[in-house]
Amino acid sequence: MVTKVVITKMSMVMEEATIVEWLKNEGDTVEKGEPIVEILTEKETVELEAPASGVLLKILAEEAMELPVDAVIALIGDPNEPLPDLESLVTALPQEASVVEIESATETPPSLKPEFAHQEAITSTDLVEEYTKRIIASPRAKKFATERGIDLNYITGTGPGGRIVERDVEAFLSLMVSEGPKIKEERKFFGIQKMTAKKVTESYQTIPQLTHVMEIDVTNIMNYRTKLTEEKGMKISYTAFLVKAVAESLVKHPILNSTLSGDIIKIYEDVNIGVAIATQDGLVVPVVHKASTKPIESISTEIKSLIKKAREKKLRSNDFMQRTFTVSNLGMYGIEFFTAIINPPEAAILSVGRMAEKPVVINGGIHIRSMMYLSLTYDHRIIDGAPAAAFLQTLRELLENPNEVAW
Image (cartoon, rainbow, N blue to C red; front, side, top):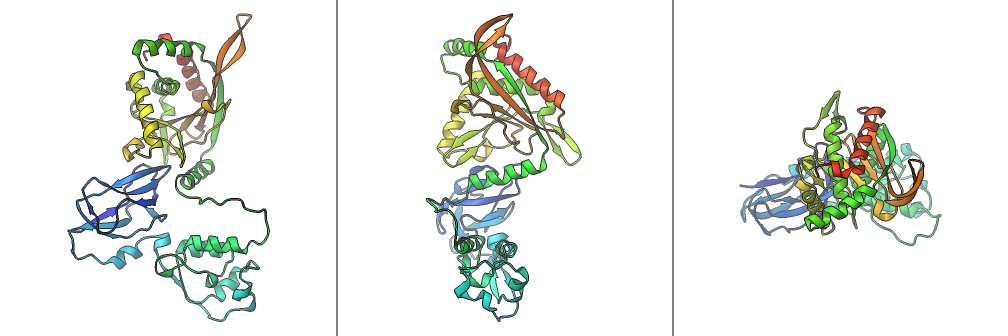
């Protein structure tokens, strides 16, 4: 029996994924649960596992192809097993995998002759549509070319069967640019970076985002960390204290642990804190699940494990799922304070700056204290300014009075 390998929905907002790399080739034997392909979903690169044991009979989706959830990307079955109708499966794939035929007159006007193709941009969309001949191109390539007034007749396709795909139009467009600064290096806009760009753009354009900034005194928590490290016999990270304190604050202010779905505000029961981690491939946000129920040492160990897995590219899909709130810490880079963009479908994100000694007035006297800025960016459709400020106030109380907290 032939089993279809499909793009699995891995989060509430996931609509599509990009094929990053096939880990198995056609004809290879695979076991159920064995990773066979890396895909990029939202901000994370994860491994998709084989749904059944057998032979990888056919790969239907190429690397760098963007596909919707539930798209069929491969077939697994017994050796020499007859395959289903491949044409129907391939034509069902969107964007780079689909084929659209454009028919019109075959006569080419002088301004569109090949010898002028790299010298002048074609700006008349009507002219392009009137003088293109029968060609094979993906819908995405056609749309990209039409928006920029480019004639597809003069582009050589590099997709399956010689069809024109979006990257071919982009390459052609770059050749048409005759002036500009000298290019030192070109890097492909792909993978986590491309997916991050898409998500932050959507977030910034669709969510009214406001930010509250609060400076807190972290002298006591620094001293408490040293004490607790000695008692537990392990080094506990500052991020672990932040995650734990944020989780406790969300329990007291649950509106920040929510999402907006249509006309319904849904408040989550679990407090699952995403921790933003920088890697060579871009930013990933794995999750500490049910952080409000875990002791500080468990959270610290879990965060260290997630960081290690992220940098070794060993994070799995369950490491990213069901995130309800995100903490982003750039203090180790010397950043004083910053504002982050909300990760949909979450309602808020906390940005953490560096710890720095400063003169502080206490009871009329000047004292040197370790201070730190916290910036809370929140969805103003769900959260008003006062509840956001109250959340920060609770967070400050927990971090400034660590001896009163059950870490």
